[in-house]
Image (cartoon, rainbow, N blue to C red; front, side, top):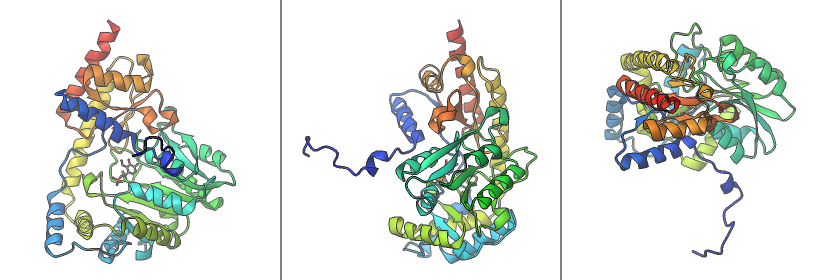
Length: 397
Ligand SMILES: Cc1ncc(COP(=O)(O)O)c(C=O)c1O
């Protein structure tokens, strides 16, 4: 390679940021290779196995020959099952042309932004929020308009903030409830208000509902802004199987939205990845139609972990932690320790052998917080809390 050759990549290539979480994971794995024993709170990947009926379904599907290209939009049979499930969960049955099957929910964010916003347009996003929102907007030259999720408001997005942020350049609002990284759950009325703001201003609303099945003892029953328009005009729902069904590695997501947008997003899928593997879609059918007891057992376990972790964090010096109502993340305030988010995460990795993520990985308003995922056993949570307590008490001595 010519070492004098510079700037040979496209301008866009220099805008690609990736996901900070994967970078931390690499750093942690390097330490583990050196023999360090690390407790993992950094990754949002369920420690449970995918339920067996789903595994059996994919095996059967492959044996039956579903190992070839398939419809880029998703197999009609799978989309029918998704439509029926949407009727049960959200009260409307989208047409098959409103449904797009994707390899994971992550890519839906790119597909939607690329098909809705031009360079220089604005997209309203939660901050703290899922890092892909910001990376995709940067890559597409679209301006992120960050709505702070404030601890005083239990990290819920405030519709008044959204209303004030609208400009003639706003193309899309992204909401995410339950939220990554705070675990907050928006109230139904707040979601409907944001839906109305989008509708009145003739802009779109992308509702990232990947954690929709992961809600605890909240008074709020599951709600989606799509219940207002059946995804016919304003709302696009991003959903996936990774979290509730412990299927992160399978890569299966579903977008539901207005037919014209879904058609274009489908053509982009066709262009970039051709289709989602058919046997993975059969797994999706099994996940939706099969016995749900394993999913419920996982949720019971997550709830027990959440209660234990939140109580334990609140006993640590300098730390306060709200009880999250959904997802499997807690977002404690660490300002009382005198460290910033990055320093705290580095300190814990070095001194407590505990991996967690600085709140700043999730946006500008994440400073002063860290994210812990409790997709790890109660035993590990207990160990991790003990180690953190010892490390924090040492600096106070
Ligand atoms: C808020 C949110 N949206 C989307 C995704 C993407 O999920 P997947 O691509 O595994 O379906 C994640 C994963 O962590 C997430 O937290």
